[in-house]
Length: 453
Image (cartoon, rainbow, N blue to C red; front, side):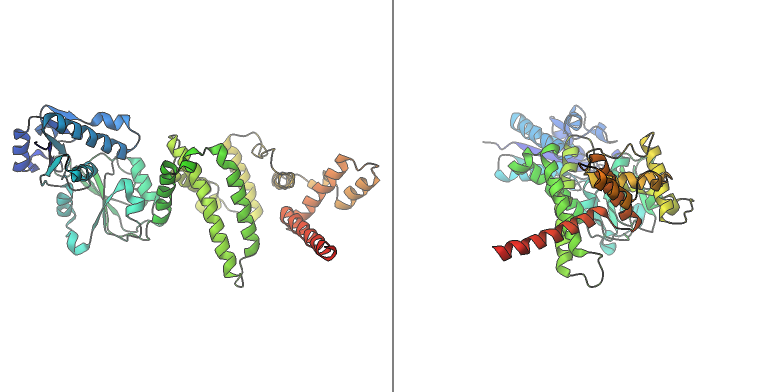
């Protein structure tokens, strides 16, 4: 029985003149032909071919696209016995479908022949004037940059930089961008070839990328945040393969987020002010609890990614932009005298950003009462209210509460609010103070409990 056969050829970096004679001969000898995509300058060398461009529109991820292509090719090979599959560039350079085809052939059900082809990297070395062996250049797929470039300091040649979002993800994956300019390589070997340099900060906004765009990074300033990217991949894997994780929703996870937050607060109590005498075990505990809280954040982000809403990159980018915008005294030309000016500016900027009529509109009504009162007082002072003219002193509130025959709710509320105002005046967090006082009461009661046992 004849084993179905797939011949894989590469269409080179772009110019049809760079396609090898062996590839041209294989195309002519194989009447049943397939193209991964028609979006390539040399696609016309493969007439009467079926393309897989429709899978890019139908599937959610590139990996899903590639697996669908491989499944279709295997079916076609079984049906026709011998088919040709043409891909951009070289079949063995950043070509995931070929990797999957070769893996599928391991069971003997199909035969895969891969012909050598010219890659865009061969032209890149010439344009850059770089010997990749001497310089130790590593080739990276932009879609997996954060993970595969983890810990790298360059030089790196990054392919598949086909849109600005991909370039933004590359830029965001680096804690401190390189100081040297980045070389942008576009449409190598074609009449409109372009080789330019850009600053790292302008990587995703200074040129229009396309499917024939790559970048060369001579040196990285700091390693890429690979641990975070690997953690995101881990959570996605748990979501896909663990029955418990697969069942979770934003609603079902909410209680875990609250619990992990309180455990972080408990670990922070152990660390205290973080002075030089802080116990190493306390920091170890805090590190663990922050990790658990990060898991909750990444889990919610993963659910949002599945819904097509946003990913961790968008979360980080959003809070980055927000913090820059809300610190005009750091990133702009606004001058401040002290921290109170910073708070006042923050509140007004936030009010404008949210389109709110009042800075009080963003305070959740369901906050714990003590925290609700604390936030109200902070914002009240930020708008310039004379709080002392509205809230009675602790002595006055206490006297009023004692004078009330039944301890009216209003007077008790005034007393508690006055305590919050006093706490802020002496720079004490009322939540922490009350919790510590309650803990002391608990310990005293435990001592009595044990003594009377």
